[in-house]
Length: 212
Image (cartoon, rainbow, N blue to C red; front, side, top):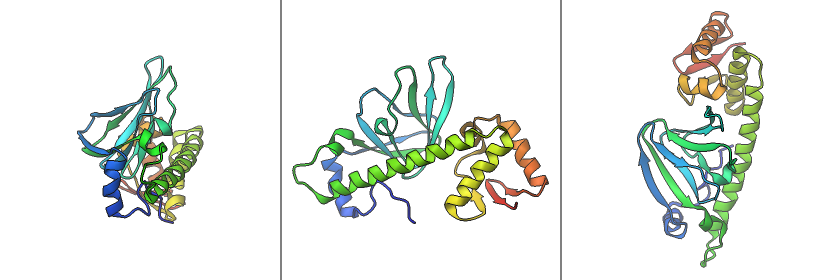
């Protein structure tokens, strides 16, 4: 099944009309540049058009940890994660990244023209929120594994099941993957080598194949 994106079932012509209706604007961010800082109010939704970014959280003790890896067609913003007052959330670009921003108030308010693509966009958005909840539940499962090896295999198996193939191409760098799994990068790379040496996986750069 083709994943639902924000503009699924909306024609390019309708998308152009929506840019005015939804007060959309684009911005380009360099590697490591902050894309958005979350606030207590729901102001806007971001859509990754090109590139890659990461959603981070900084807790009240100043510890930073990764919440989500964002790639093309990923959406982010306060509606997807209601910020806690004691925590700071922000999105950081991990390559040159082009983002489309949509004013949230225009999403929840019915436009005067009652255009059909408004309802379609809201429907797409709700489906994407449901998918994001499922992905976060799966990540909680991965992070709950009690060793680096088990976290790696749980992550690889989840991607393999999603793509219905034993060959996995990592959607992020190994450094970002270590952040995503909340493990030490050096320990993770050693475990990947051990898994390959034991014939459990094959590894060629970011391309991995599950053998066992």
